[in-house]
Length: 488
Image (cartoon, rainbow, N blue to C red; front, side, top):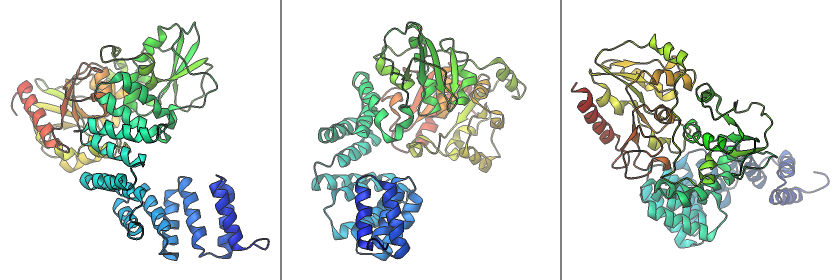
């Protein structure tokens, strides 16, 4: 610090930060704090740098310290609110933001951040009011419009959601996340022509980095391949790969060699597909290829409509996996064998809506006329232990190493009942009868106001009639089972 004062060092640190030179900014902040540990500006800027670096836990600690050092600085409270929001501490975030509004009530961005926190707390009315306050203060705040649209979509108000997202795009045409939100609304309505075009914007979204791998080879334009090798890349979840792998056959018909990079746990099952010459697990070295294309961008390339969705190639469990479960499943003459999965990945953004607690299935499972088999993996499977008595229940999930194993078990079942997770795609691709339990605001692929799926002919949809009403869904399924298998 001999060459410059603390104020000069802090000024340079801010200049580096504003220029995007984050490492230099951090070095100067550390220099300031080595001389003056309680320098609030330096602590706050260190928090910003930690937040930008994805270290929200560290940022949270630093912002809290900055607020303690300088309680009157509303920008420090704002940064604290942002870090709390990122850490899913929604009530605390609202409290921090309210302290900012107490000083500066007309900050539109703070109102819409509060709206996001309320939405995540399951209080949509307060969330809508907050976003509308933001729009009243600043009608040109695109984020407030699209956040409002997201709530409308969650409430099943798709037309209003589309209007809000389009308002956001009128203000900020190159906003990738808004195009993505709009795509989901258009696709759930069945407007594939407009929806697929918007769907491509996912490749520019921060949350979809796996949709834009850094290849020097060109992205395929759909022309004849003339013997060239094309690499198809998977993204997002296991169910997405199972759903879109059907397009590999259309690619193969363009005259090339098809290589697919996908989740390793799917390969033992998908390897049977004749359209693919080679399978590569994610993270493995890639072979030589001339062109590439994201698997989930193929519907746009092939201009898929509801009438031209490619037929799903029927997946069959490998014979050794079928035999594996033949030895493990007790034959129950006269009883239906039903597989159950009630939860998806907890990390999924919409998991709080699409998954249900095991306890909600009890009216269905307390039957003697059917044998139920767990298809549930992950933390949700532990819920079974609370209801160990009184159930005709078999749990063989310890034997499910990969999806070929899951297919081997499903091959023995008469019916699969599940929520919107990869199991639904797997059973649907196998042609197995699937009764899919859907949230009131479903994922785009299941569309609206129909009880069948154009993607999987064997899937039947049981929708919530109002948000959160899993009891109604389970009740309708129970009635259907009674009609098929007889009373308990």
